[in-house]
Length: 274
Ligand SMILES: N[C@@H](CCC[C@H](N)C(=O)O)C(=O)O
Image (cartoon, rainbow, N blue to C red):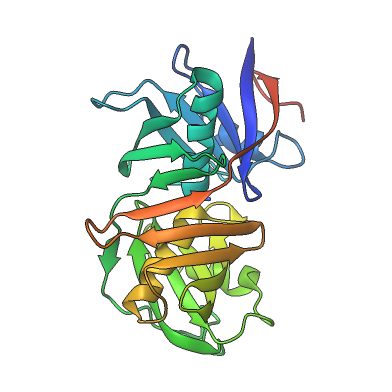
């Protein structure tokens, strides 16, 4: 028995997408982590499972798993990829994704770019203190760090300069800091203009990725709260740029960017070659 999959990416944040609407494969967290392994599996930042929607108006129920097998409530780049997957497989140019973070409308623009309405952020007003344990005391801060949830937890650190910054040092320490009982995605941002920033994200459960959609949304929300940018902002990450708009009328965050198919394939249902 083989499991067919799509391999897709959004700005280099890459995904394995498996359609379980007709048949479940009983993938355990350990099996997902094995399939996500870049040396012994297919390799991906997140593993995405599609199930039948159970909410009125939704086209599909989407579950996101990190490379370590843990489940995430949201994934912006994968949401765009699922919208593109629905366009290819079912001809939909507009869809509604049911996720653990709620119902997310998505649509394909004339230029092929995908927009997802990521919903309203949940703002956290507690401080994110710097600490020796998290190796953050030396960071050249340009604003106070802030935390927000886009259906998954994010903290953003605003830096005056990212040149010497290695997210792989402070990132894992902060991800596991007792400050974040569910762990957290950690963004390091440098504001370049009122409508532009640079961002690198250490992702909970996956490590440093080339782009993080929910992280870009959270970074703009947090930067607006700190008075650093306007509500429409381009977020440049290692893999490319997302357009983020925090809509004033209803507080929803809109994320626009590409969604690309790399290849399709199939893996044996039982075990991965070791
Ligand atoms: N790559 C993602 C976020 C994936 C989930 C995250 N690692 C978490 O655990 O919350 C994105 O594009 O948003």
